[in-house]
Length: 285
Image (cartoon, rainbow, N blue to C red; front, side, top):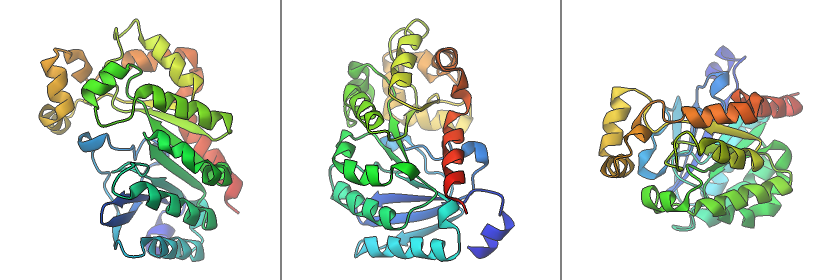
């Protein structure tokens, strides 16, 4: 850990915490500055990919809270914790209401209150997050909440992501967090059908801007052959093809929404990175 940190002293230390049925995983990542927010998006169920880890530590299910606490204590002793970005939820949604994950997530938020990183990026699609408002407010100066909203159309959300909470409930969650002055980022990754590809991009963009501090948009396919093969085998890709919505499978599927966001919020090209970097500067001695 020391060697890697000293070698890349100018880079931001990036870690992730993911909850599983049988425990959790604490990982260390190497990301460029521009990837601080977009580099570790919350996977969309089985559609997502796991970001490559520089190192990975499996944590047993027995007493995993104290084990995470041990990792954070070690980072604090090394002088790394206060300048680090920790992503809470990249593979699985930590606020998922089953398998005891939500209760464990609340316990881990208490650990993060005791051992605070420079920035904690909590990523979720679950409106249950508002139940944790006291913990969120305690972390607010160092917290960014990233909410996945792939489409504002609940009929499309039910069609392509049936296991995920309704889009309107996620919009309400984002607006609630904003009212409590908690920084909110929205991840539209991947962008899914929201109506007319071009005509309805501006209304969607306006809704995203109204409930967030920053928005990141990405297509389901990015042009790489390996991603395209994976998407073809995925439930979302197969449903889009069955519904003959082929332009949502193109690498330029996100462009109308990105353009609408750029018009309505001209600074939207870099706000997420700027927010994270600004917060880090507040807490790095």
